[in-house]
Each structure stands twice: as structure tokens, then as C-alpha cells.
Length: 196
Image (cartoon, rainbow, N blue to C red; front, top):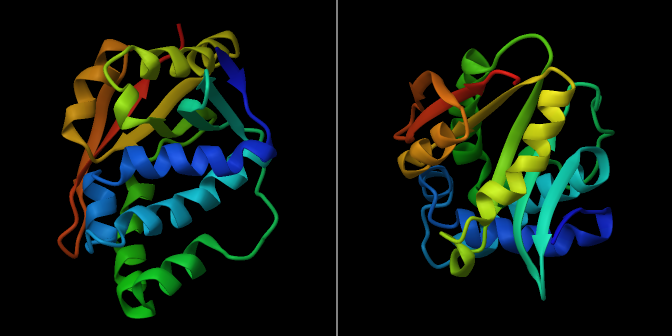
């Protein structure tokens, strides 16, 4: 069943994100310690889950538990009020200030591949690993794509996982740009989908 989540779902969203992204090239780069990566990923991406559950759009598929989520930032969402822990502050607490500064310096390059103007941003799409390859990713992204189409918004996303490119292309996305993060980071593909 597809549903829009609420802030009370943030903990479950955090769990899905952590399980799905623990092996993602970007998260492996940011949190290189295999033993602590799952917890670090849950903590860090959990802040995005809380923000989007409160101020954005989160679509989810749930049966007995949350199986898939899509976290969207829409153009009229505004800037969320500051809260603790901050995204940058938590990253520094998890990996140390020096490494966090290096990571942030590299991540700033994302701004060079981000479109200008009004668009919907698919920030995170996650499916629990035990539920992948069952069509849940496509199902959970479709309501957000339909909303973007109805409102005349193009959709932007980034991925550091080359395995995701074909999936997004099957949904009408095309690679719009590519970069490689400094400091030994992975390649990143920016993708764009025109409204239909």
C-alpha cells in the first residue's frame, strides 16, 4: 500500500534508508568503517528522514513494515528551521571535524550539477534489500513523478551507484551531468526528467 508518511514514521524511514544505503558508494566513502557504517548511515540519513517527513514529501510502501520510501524536496518547501543535531554537525561527530570538512568540500561540487529554476528533487529513494527487485522502487516513485507531471515540474536526482542508472532511465530520466568527488570520492551522475 502506497501512502504519504508523517513525522511519526521518521524512525521507520531511517531504518529503510540505512539498510538500502549501507553499501552505496557515497556512504562507503563517507563512512569507510564496515563495522560502524550501518549505524552511521542510519544516524546521518535519519536527519534527512526527519526533515522530509516534517517539511517535504515522503511516499512509502508498507505492508507489515515499511518496505520502500521516496523522499522529495519540492520547490515551494522553503528552508527548514535550524535544529540539532545539524546535518554537518552530526557528520563531524561521526567521522571527525577534519574528515567532515574534507567531505563537505567535495560535496559542494553537487551545486555545479544542480539545475536552476523550479523542479522537484528526488533526494533519496530506498527499498529494503530483502524487498528489492520486486517493483517497489518503481511503485513508490510513481506518485511523486505523477505530482511533478501534473504541476509541470521537471525532476532532478543524483546517484553514485552505477547500477541505478538503467532503472532511472527506464522511468524517463537521462544523465544530465557527471562529476567525480575529490578526496577519493565516487563518481556522481546527475539525472533529469522533463514533465510529461
